[in-house]
Image (cartoon, rainbow, N blue to C red; front, side, top):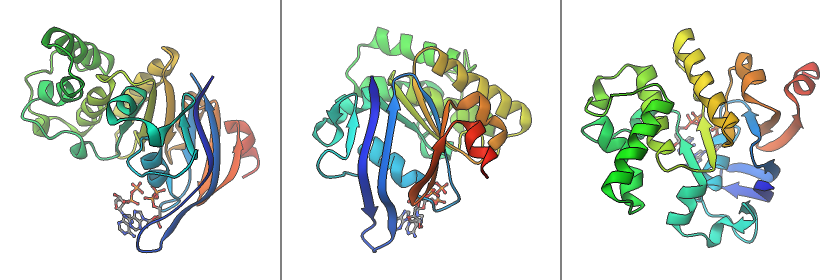
Length: 227
Ligand code: ADP
Ligand code: ADP
């Protein structure tokens, strides 16, 4: 089953910057995909197309066989969750509970279900009991995990992570890689942008190398034996 299908996607920003050119990507349900590419390669721009923040015309982006452009916000958030690189972009409420509950509340779920989802999401990322903590006071690694929990609570089938391991100490990095790997084992399709090639074997079945265009695609072994 195709989770994501991108068909000849090109995108230029309003100022004329050509960010993406003829991108073709097919990701199957349950796959773990890493997208590597230098700064400015278009990774963030691609991700913004995968959750519908940036609109593409025609059938350029399909999510589980549906044209993303035709999906309502409420539909999209159940399919695609994005965790941005900077957790401060995602944590803006007074407590961790409020941040992780934000998505489920907006989905119109009842209070009991919201609480259940917050508890489950926090436990998945190893932050059990953090409900009453103040986001600002957490360590950077804890913030990264809280931001992930705030997306997981919406229970998306596809999880997109932008540089999840950037700026983390080795222990926090290893913890987060374990968490993400566990989510994929539970059936969530994961798409990750990263530079950290050491984590590639754990986090990818397949790698796309992006530099405005897709310049290579293959298993981690194939990609790195050619480079
Ligand atoms: P990343 O961590 O994905 O490499 P960047 O550092 O490239 O992110 O970009 C950070 C933010 O700055 C993004 O929100 C991006 O949209 C914005 N940005 C990047 N380049 C430009 C630009 N030339 N003009 C305006 N905004 C930009
Ligand atoms: P990456 O995430 O791989 O670092 P981005 O998708 O952030 O790459 O950026 C791709 C290109 O688009 C870069 O040249 C960047 O400067 C440019 N860019 C990003 N955001 C904007 C924006 N809001 N306006 C203009 N150019 C942008």
